Length: 276
Image 1 (cartoon, rainbow, N blue to C red):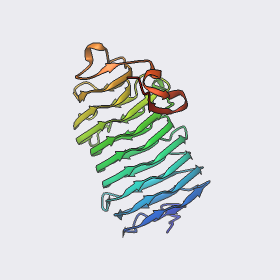
Image 2 (cartoon, rainbow, N blue to C red):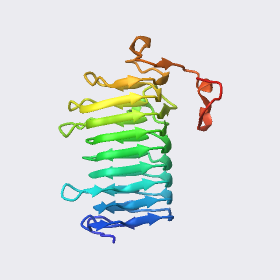
Image 3 (tube, one colour):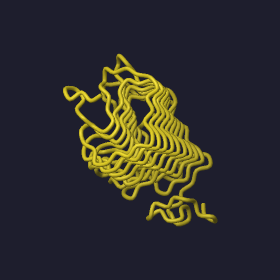
Image 4 (cartoon, one colour):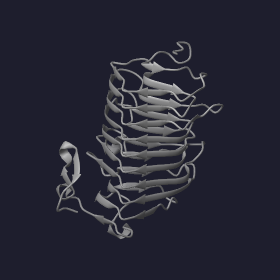
């Protein structure tokens, strides 16, 4: 159902007052979308969005799953979707609990679009085995809790001088800080420009336990006072806050991408057989 007064049109859309359970959106191809985007679902429980192809969204999001303060989205699974050339953000999740975002592929976004954004009071998010490339910001977090980022390829083309980071936890201003455990494990997080692929803000002062382990990272910055638990990361560059003396257990620096990936310039991030 599309509500032109409050929600506008789109590909597959329901109005924000339409509570429902068990909606399945599978094997759809949505091209040249407009309005709020290709798939925009509000206030659902145990929905599944899988195996869809979304191409050339002229406006709006690729896939948006949202709730409100009075009716959260819960138990949604977003998996194995392919998104390309989305003018805004590819995947957007707001006011959701116990969400799984797995196995999706997304590339090419508009100038203000992120690969995936997890904003505003999400709780219990698994973001795993996704591949996001050619994004200014591949994954952005804000005002959420208990988020696991595992086994993803996150690649960006944005410049850190322009405020673009590949994985960023933004400032919430006077809002709610990140909380619970935020685990960033076994990911490839690399940028074509700049040397800060991972950035986390401490405004307002974070309440989260940050774990950064077993990643390949193109430099990172955590604001003062955050003290993440880091170990066994391979850095392919350092940010201005990093140096050899800042390395933790099992961490090291190798700036030669040819010793790590088959062909990073062509987005082939398979590990070399005899590299580091």
